[in-house]
Image (tube, rainbow, N blue to C red; front, side, top):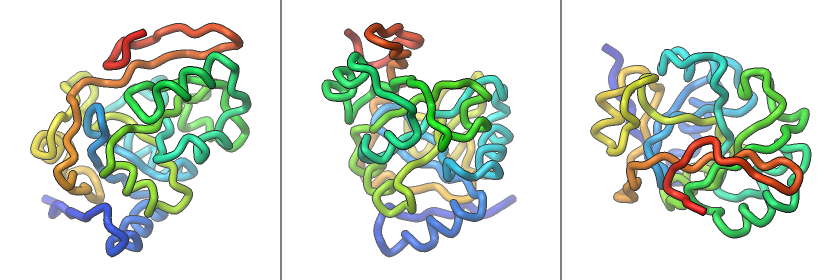
Length: 201
C-alpha cells in the first residue's frame, strides 16, 4: 500500500505541493463545508485521477475554488448582476455559483457543459493552500467515494481516499462544518437553487 504523504499549507511545502499538482497529482484538503479533492484546473491527468479515485460519473462536473474570487473570474465568460450580488453577499462562504464558462475553462472539468461552478471557501487553511498554489485555483470536488458520505474530518478523509491521493494537507485545526455548499445557477437576472446546502436564502 502506498504510504500516505502529509504536507502543510505553509510556504515551506509550497514547492512540494506545486510539484505534485503540476505532475497531475491530486491532493486532499479541508474546506469550510466538507473535505475536498483538488488538482490543477489545466491538468487533464489530475482531473481524470479525481474521477477514478471517486468512481465519479463523468457527467458530473468539478468546480473551481480559490482564496479570492478575482482568481476565478478569468474562468467565466460573464457575471450577471444577480451573480454579483450573491458573490458580494456570500463569498467567502458555502455558496457555489454556476456561470457561463470562458474558453480558459477546460471541457473535461465541466463534463462538456457550457457552465462552471465557482466558490471561495471561508476556511483559513484552504485559503493558505490556494495562496501557495501556482495560479491560486484548484479544480475540486468532495473527498469521498461517490454515493458515500462526504468526509467531515481528517480521519474520515484518510480512511476514505487517503490511499489514493498523492498527498493530504493537514487541517491545522481549521475544521469544516460537515454540510455541503448550496449550489446556485445564475443566469441573466435570476437564479435557481440546484442543491440546498448550508446557505439558505
